[in-house]
Image (cartoon, rainbow, N blue to C red; front, side):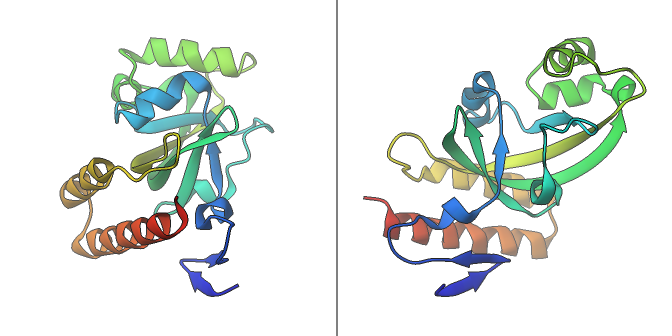
Length: 178
């Protein structure tokens, strides 16, 4: 271990630094809309054993978004909250790139057929920091979009941290991407 940054030990060499970041897994149909910036939240049933969220449910955490076992982006967690399934609303649906609460609830019932109105769900709001398409290339527009959102929704201290993190990730991706 050559460095320790933000609670993540960084190993130099062939192993990519982001391989050590926690994963937030998505169904394949959500990958493209996350990369396009249309989906900025995910809702998970709390009692579900298959969803082990751990460190990705902490605001400020950085994680890797995955689908079909492939990394597609580096995400920063902006907010986490819990609510009853029955309290899912149109605003949350729009954050998930859906038209209504009933549409989102129907999609969630597809993942969690046993879910009931009184069950608790965790909403994780995130921003795409860097997209990782084939070849894991850094897209500067993704970083610029995050920084613009940060200016609108974060304190000056949080913006400074986000800028520092963007620079850190960009440098490491340039060093280890061929």
